[in-house]
Length: 344
Image 1 (cartoon, rainbow, N blue to C red):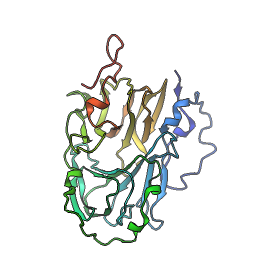
Image 2 (spheres, rainbow, N blue to C red):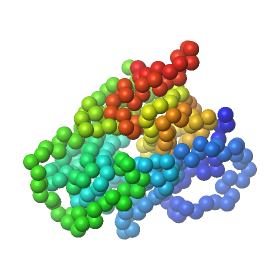
Image 3 (cartoon, rainbow, N blue to C red):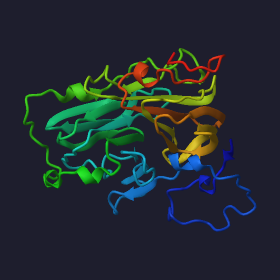
Image 4 (cartoon, one colour):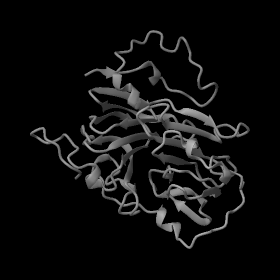
C-alpha cells in the first residue's frame, strides 16, 4: 500500500485562470508515489461557464464526474452553488433527455439540514413542483423538464445535477425542446409528477450514533420512496472527526460514488477538513471537495479523518441498487474474523 499525495492535490480556486499552474507552487515539497488508483478520484472539477456574462461564481457549473474524467463512469455529476434568484443556470428552458436524471437541492446549514434556504419552482411536463426544503426531483427519461426558477434565496445552497447511463448529458438532449425558451409550459398528461419528488428523507442508513457525524444519515433517493428507481442516495453532515470511522468495504454487484462536499459558499472547492480514503489498495489524501468512483468489486475505504475545520457533507450514491439492504449487503470489512457484514 502507498499513501499517495499527488501534485494535483494543491487546492484550486475559482478566482483567476483555473487552468493556470504556478511553476513554483510545489518547490521544496516531496510527493510520494502517484497511485494507480488516482484515476478513480476527481479532485479538480471541470469548470463550465453556463453564461459568460454571469457575475463572479454565478453561472459556474462544477463537473465532478463524467466519462471525460473517469472513462469507466457512465454517469454525469455536476454541482452549482446558488447565490441569487437572477443567477443563470442550465435549467432555464424546457428540455428532454433520453436518460434518467435527478436534481438534488441541498440546504447548506448543518444545524437545519432539511431547510433549503430558498424557494424553488420547477416544472415536470408542465406540472409545477414547488419546494423550500432539501429536495430530490427524479426525472424519468423522455420527460420534459424545466424551466426552473428561484422565488427567493435567503442563503446560498447547492444544486446537484445527475445523469444516469451517460457520461455526457448533451448527447441525449432533444434540441427541439430548448426552443420553448423560458415560458411556462402547459401540462399535457393526466399524471401527478409529485410521485417523483422527495421533500423529506428517510433515516435508516448508519448506526444510531457516531461522534462528530449525523447518523442515521438522510436518504434522498431509493426504491421505497420512488418505486421505479433503482439507485440509492444518502448523505449526512460531518462536524468533527467521526468515531467510529467508516471501515473498508467492497460491493460485489454495484458501483458506488462517494462525494465529499465542502460548505463554504465563498470557497466551494475547500473541503473544510482533511482525510485519507482507501481506493483500491492505496490510501489517497484529500483536503478539497472531491468525488470518488468505486466500480463494483473494488475495495474502498476506510475513511480516516485527520481534521474537520468546518462542517461538510459525505454523500454516497449506490448505482443499480434501490434499497440500503440490497446495495450494502455483505460489504463492510470490520468483523473480528475478517468477514464482511451488511448495513447496521
